[in-house]
Image (cartoon, rainbow, N blue to C red):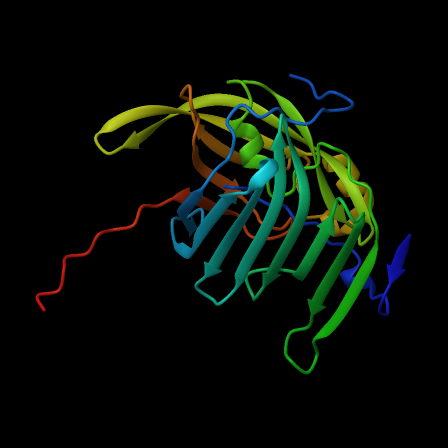
Amino acid sequence: MLTHVVDYRPACKYLIVLVMAVLVSSPASAAPVSVRFPEGVTHGFLLVRSLAGEILGQGEITQVAQERGLVESRLVFRFNDGSVHDEKVAFSQNGVFTLLTYHLIQRGPFFPEQVDIFFDRGAGEYKVKTISGENENEKKEEVWAGELKLPKDVYNGMVVMTVLNLPKSTTETVKILIFTPEPEIINLDLLPKEEHTVRIGTHSRKALKYVFKPDIGLIRKWLGRMTGRLPDDFHYHCWVLADEIPSFVAYEGPLQLMGPLMKIELVSPDLLAASAN
C-alpha cells in the first residue's frame, strides 16, 4: 500500500539514490552475501575529490558492533558548499549480512534532490521526503510513505562491505532499493576487473578494481526521457586491497544517479606539533 501524504508534483516524481557503504554473468536470483570478515568497531576518515582532483569535502565513518550480531554504522560527508550526506545503516551478521534499517539524508546545493529516506525491514515500512525549489520562498516539501517487503539481499549503504566479503575476484549480484517514488528493487552487478598498483608509504601493493553496474534497462524504463544524460553503459568503480584480508581503497562515482561524479578515498589524521605553551 502506498500513502501519498502531499500533492504529487511530476518534477519530483523520480528519485534514485546510489549509496556507498562502510565505505561473468548475473544470476537471476542472488542470495545474501556470506560473512567472511565480521564487522566490529570502526572509526575512519575520508576525503572527497572531484575527478580533476579538487577537494570537495571530508567524510567520517563510525561503526559499533552490538549484541546478537547487530552492527550500527554511520557515514557522514560534509561538503565545502555546506551540503551534507548523512547515512545510517543497521544490519545483522549472523552467517550472512542482512540490512535491517536504513536512513539517508542528503541536503544542500551539491545534490540535485534534497532527500530524507527511511525504511525498516522489521516494521515493513518506508518514508521518503523530498524538498525542491531554488530559494526559501519557492521550496516545496513532499512525502510518500507505505508498506515494504525487502528481499534478503538488499544492500543499500552496504555495497562496499559486501565486496570486501567476496572471495577474491568473485562476481556477485546484489539488490538496491530505489524510489520512483514507489519503492522498487533493481539488481546491481559487482564485477571484478583488472588489478592496479597502490602506494602505502614507501611500499607498493595491488588493489583490485570492481565495476558496480546497476540494471540500467529498468532505470531507463522508469525514468524515460529524464535519462537522456545517462549513458547506456552507466557504471561506477571501487578499488579494494587485493590481499588475503581486503580493505577499502577508493570509490569513484555519484551519490545520486544524476549527481556529480567524485572520488572518495581514505585519509589519515595528521599529528600536529605540540604548542610551545
